[in-house]
Structure formats: C-alpha cells, structure tokens
Image (cartoon, rainbow, N blue to C red; front, side):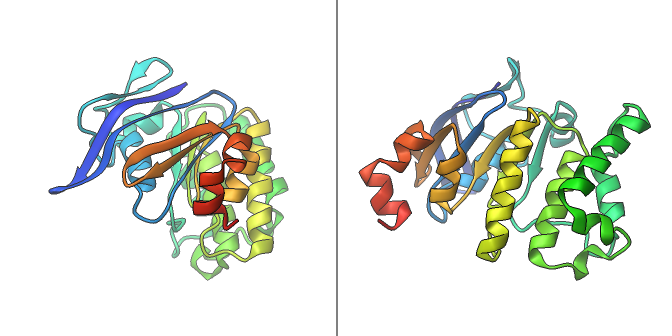
Length: 235
C-alpha cells in the first residue's frame, strides 16, 4: 500500500535519513521504533511532503507521491497525527473536528456517521464539544487529534508518538483506540518510543538507528529479539 524505497533526507548539511526502505501493508499496523533523533519523525514528514526526500521514491497505492505537495498527499487519503497533537487551542472541540473534514466532498450524512463514531469512541469529546480545545488535558487533546484525523476519512493514518506525555492509564486507552481504528479497516504507521506497547499491537515493525533501518520483522519477532530487548524494552 505504502512503500518507501531508498529515501534519504537532510536538514541543511546534516543528513538525517540514509537510504531507508520500508513497507506498510493495507489494513495493518506497522510500527517504526527508535531512540530520540533516530529519524522517525523525519520519515513521516517525508511521506507527507513536509520534508523533501533525496533519491529513492515513495509510492502510495502504486502511485509515486515522492514530489507531491502536502495538500495533494492528504487528498489521496493519507493523514498525519503529529507529535505534540497540534490541535487548535483557541477553537472549540467541534470546530477542530469540523476542520478535519474540510476537504471532504461526500454526503453530509456520511460525515455525520463518522462524527457519531468519534463521539461514541471518545465520549469526553461529545460532552465538551463547545469547550476550547486548549483547556483540555493532554490525554483529551490526543483523543481530539485522533478524532480530527478520522474526520478526514483517511485510508492511511501516520501517528507520531501518540503516547508522549500521557499518564500510563491514558496510554493504554490510546492504544486500545489504535487497535479499534485498525479494526475499522484503516492502515496505520505508528511511530512510538514505547516500543513494548507498539510492538505488541503491530503486525510488522522496523527499528531505525541514526537514520538507518537496523532491524525489521513481525511485532512478535522484534519483541523477542535480544538486541531490541536490551536497547528499547529495558530488559
């Protein structure tokens, strides 16, 4: 569904990604784990066209999107939930959700069905739909960021560190929601520092180190890998 072949990326003279390749299969959760500064977020930004890759290619459903602009990539059914959530703090919960659907051209009742699903999944958003988003807790804002993404009806959702800064009980809820979204038929590329949780729900995973793909395998294979255990699982 999504395939990256031999992409590199730099910020000025600093090379961040070195000839990386990975695949994300339809209807599955693929995770990309690694330490701070390893290149995880840059990989997502390359997919979204925020950072221009050097060499190689990025294809989505067999179409080359390497040089497309971000709005065109979004229109093709790819959505990013960024690290830090980046909700609009001075807008209400409902206004944030409505913005997620701004490019949709399907029927209003279909959009309403999606909104109803989001409110059923995140009841706090329904009860606080008039509340300014910036006054909500970190966990509630993460739920809003996920809901806003789903309002765009994406086929592929890129998630960047959805557990960051959240209490453990909220992290568990976020990961339950990620699995629920996958069960809707969505495809997910999950970037996450909580390697144990990410690998436990992933069909396939990649380990990125200093801009290189160092290891890959099924989620269970990586969970059982001694190198991964030592470096990322604290075992």
